Image (cartoon, rainbow, N blue to C red; front, side):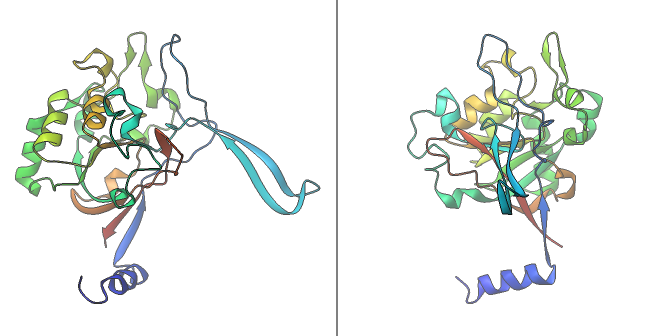
Length: 260
């Protein structure tokens, strides 16, 4: 390691040569949550319960209880979340090696296509065209699909559910196999409520992002924001979930480091 590399990093942060960009959505009672058919279990919406606020319940302090599902708001998906990833060692939020929570990011801009078609699927051909412009996807990188979906402030427009299910852009099944097998990425990130497309329950396999990523011991990030502030390459993501014992995922404050 070059001498003083961490001191140089700290100095660059202090000097503003490295910007920190928050890729997370705020958490409150209006945060959209994943909708499942009624025959399946449902996740809790985010709830905040005040314990005390500088009053008789606690004169000098303010704090709260909170409750929510693991996959609420901007969140991390661990391999144990899906049946295909259940048998890996170190596959839960408390056992994934900590060094996995820092990795470079490649951002694929599909915002124009998603605006024209809410069911748009990013394909291998789209990504190979991106690579011709920006270089090969780094091994061990996150691949983030920018759709500007996070700009949909109305929860119903964000979920975009109809009688036949949600209509939200996402990855094509073939792309996921390519990214895992030929690019060896660490995980896939989305601006939508989940990592899969809204109609992914109809795909083969169903929910291919979950099935393929977690089936290969990779990770997911969902409900990301501010991807329009990241360069196509060069950002570094910080993505640690809460250290929930045997946790399948966790809300998290995803940060990106970008050269100013």
